[in-house]
Length: 281
Length: 184
Image (cartoon, rainbow over all chains, first blue to last red; front, side, top):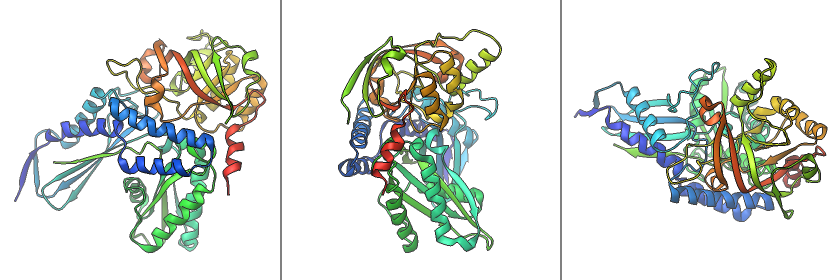
């Protein structure tokens, strides 16, 4: 059965998700920050984590942005294949939702129209839009505002297959160590392994959406995640890079089959304000 | 942690020379925001022999671009941005008379040297604690480059803005010293 939808139906939903994501950090993250607070050894680190927890509570209560960098809006839309669309172009409706959310929500407009001439577009559009076709007749939307500080420290490489797991882990560690305090730790480390360059980076981004504490179901990736988490926290970078035992809250690896010649690895870093909100229409 | 030191602007090099890395400060008074785009314009003005939009003599520059202010509130969410991006402008701003910078994250190796040379400091605020930090800002006025939106130069009156000395005027670096303590 075909379900008919007008593209304008997504506007209000996306606007609300932009605001919700920026105002309200989810419980999974808050719980992880609280756990880190009890375990942190550095007094500066403990103080910082305490402030971040209070900041999240206060932003939610006041319905204001928890972090001033309300990011590039990444909009992921899983569209049921039984839906038939009418109305304005879907991408225009998505931009309209982002424009409305950022304007009405008093969120920062951080997009420049051209990376070289750097003139602010004034409404935080365009967003990065990822439509995906899935079975069913529903539309599932996730808005993920991604801050610049942590996004800037991500990295991609293509390793030779011979270096295997050790090469992958080495690249992840180097990326996290180089990023130091610039990514606003404690961070979540999203890793993509395999695919092509574009697919690999996308896996790394999506890995950031997995709840903290949840492991990859494939045992050797789950083991790598645990090993890396321990090694990253042993770097001593700590909350906001001021030293301490909490550098990462989790490491999430996603993989995809790849070419016989290839071992691509992408690392996407997420600051402590891991923001995302979802809704289904 | 070190005891809390109350600092009130106006400040001079004399007031900051004895600050040590790790000192916790509560700053009250006037500071100016400037980040990537504003620094670029200041550099262009300097190259073209044009006047600077603000007299930075003995001022602190806060690397920050706030959110718009919601009605009923004094200030939009605000916290420091990554300071490293402004490293290439540090000597220029010191030469313009700047006393110090407020930001977050590590700096390039030459920045501590510049702090030593000019008797300046780098102060750390908490990145992403933007809702709470907005309560420490009592007034905000755009004073230059209004067309840059969030990146314009703003004069802020702050009250008890909590800061940690990241690089002192002796050129010592707080973060690298702390990280060594917790590295295994």
